[in-house]
Image (cartoon, rainbow, N blue to C red; front, top):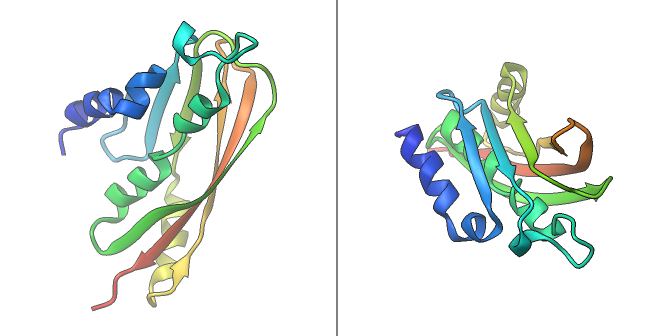
Length: 148
């Protein structure tokens, strides 16, 4: 898959385009993705900070997409649960950096080797321009190896 086209296409995806969410980086091995969102008139809430729905949207598909590309077509992968903890008002440009480590991939493969479903939990912080955490999102992803 051409990462440049994927990154561009994701940034033009209507839910992201409408909120001003931009995919800044996708690692060639899909182990890191960086997403940002500037505060604009169309994505701020009543009190002038980032709308919570836009903050949640900027974290929605990435762990699932990363795992789909890393694990390949032998696995079923989908989002199961997402929770967001708003810590501070989001102002300016906010960024989320998604990372997957080798140990996490190994654990998923070992836990699904017999065809059982596995529900790993991942966490991503959304930070402001000063690096302060404004929200933490926890994601539970459903993963199961397809059995022939």
